[in-house]
Length: 144
Image (tube, rainbow, N blue to C red):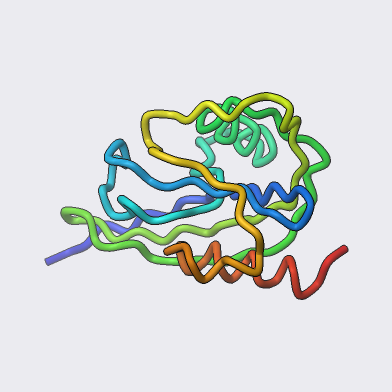
């Protein structure tokens, strides 16, 4: 059986305040239903024709209502989520270190059920997506 191959680019925001990272817990609104209950960094797939920074700004705002700034590339990774119907996907993720106006309350989208500011010392207490965990480890092994 032929599997259609699809390639996506995702922007992921690592918002850090006082050595705490903002993460979201996936809810039942996840259209692929593959990450339900797992924790992850903010962000998602960039739309065709969209500038990566604009896509990241949009995704973060849609997920939390936060505005980000001072966006710096940090790390690039890739992963292949589960096969969906007759498609196999590859996602290239560009991780960015960002600041946010955190005086604005976090307002979650219907895709997420909870958020947390986690201390990097407590990261093992959360079931994070592997690619997000790698990016967080890189961030804190190589601070700017």
